[in-house]
Length: 419
Image (spheres, rainbow, N blue to C red):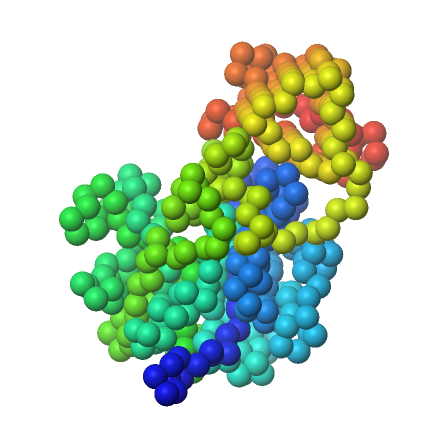
C-alpha cells in the first residue's frame, strides 16, 4: 500500500462488537444491552464508537448484536441511517444461527460467524472495535501507525492504574512498541517498565490486515477455548505475526479543549464508573466536553421544544430537549429529554433518563433514574434519606439506581418500584 513514497488510503471495514450483557451495569441492562444504555442526556454508549468511525471517514460499519438487542436496533435505525448501503452503511448483524452456528460464543466467534461480510467488502484492513466505552478517537491516526510500522495487527493501548488493571487485557511491549506479551484480565497485572504505578492496557480495539484476520478466525474456529480476541487470537499471533501497540495518548482529536483530560477513555462497566463518566461531562471545564463541534458525537435527532426552566437554580447541569422544570434546584446533574421536574424538587449529582416525572419537593442525590419512572412528591432519595438505605444491590457504590418500570400496565409503568 506504499506508492511513490506515500501511503495510499486503504479500504477499511469496521466490525463493531455490541452484544455484551453488561451484567455489572444492572439494573440499567435489565431490558437493554450495555451499548444501548443512555449516556449524557441525549446519547447511547454506542454513539461514541460509531461517531469515531464516522468522523474518521470510515463509513462501512457492521454492528454485531446479541443480548436484548431490540432497543439498540431501534436506536441504530433512527440515528444511524447513512450512506448508499454499498460502501457506506451501519448494519445490524445478529447471530446467523445457520450451518450449526448458534449464539455468539465470544468476540472472535462473533466476527467468524460473519466472515462472509469481510470477504464481500474485500477490505485491506478490518477494524474490530468494542461498543461500550466512552472516548473520542481519530481512527485514521491509528491506521497510519499500522501502515507505517508494517503491522499485521495493531492494538490500541492506554496506561491504567495498576490497582484497577485486573479488569483489562495487559500488554507487554519492547522498545519498538512491538507486543511481546498479552495477558487477558490477569489477577496480578505486570507494571509498565519504569512506571510501577501503571500497567499498559488494551482498549479492546484492534486493526487486522484482512487476510490475516480471516486466517486467524478460521484457525480459532477449529480450536477449543473461549473464541475471544484477547484470550485466544492475540496471544497466538504474537509468535508468528507483527503485532504492534498503538499509544492512544498520541491520538490528536480535532477541537479538544486545553482543559480536557488527555486521552480521555472510560470503561463504564459498573454503576460507579458510569455515574462518574456522566459527571465528567459537567461544568465549564469538563474532562470530556461534548460541545466539540469539530468532533461531534452523533445520535438520534430530537425535534422537541427547547428545555423550559422557570425560576430554577441550575449549576453545572446538562438538560435535554423538551424537559421542563419549575422552581427546582438542579446541581451537577444530567437531565435527559422530556423530563418533568415539579416545584421545589432538589436534584444533585444525579442522572435522570428520558420521560421521567420528578414530583414536587422530591429530593434526589447520587441517583440514576431509568426511563418512564415517576418519583413521588416529597420522597427523599439521598445519602440521608430513608429510601436510599432500603435494601438494594445497586446502592453498594453509593449510587442508587431506580430501574425501568415493568411495561405491564400504564399505571404500573409510571409507578416508583418498591424495594
